[in-house]
Picture 1 (tube, rainbow, N blue to C red):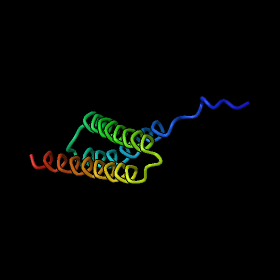
Picture 2 (cartoon, rainbow, N blue to C red):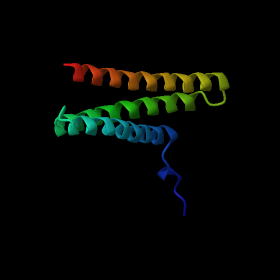
Picture 3 (cartoon, rainbow, N blue to C red):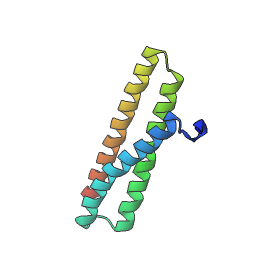
Picture 4 (cartoon, one colour):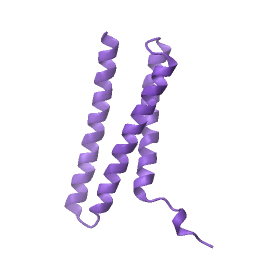
Length: 104
């Protein structure tokens, strides 16, 4: 017997995938800073959780908009491009913040 209500919608899957990717990327950088003694384990963990949340929200929001614009190729293309730009902005702000913290 099949239960279709057990399937997650694409936005939920994108949110989870984005959070996992964000946590992995942030975790690598935070681990390096922890090993160099620049951050405590608690600070690094907190930063990873914040970055994972941001990445998950951006991914989920992008997928929600993409689903809403399905069947409209121009809007879908703009959604994908804006999600890419938002992701790059997020990574850039993370890198700048990390550079600012190490400069102090």
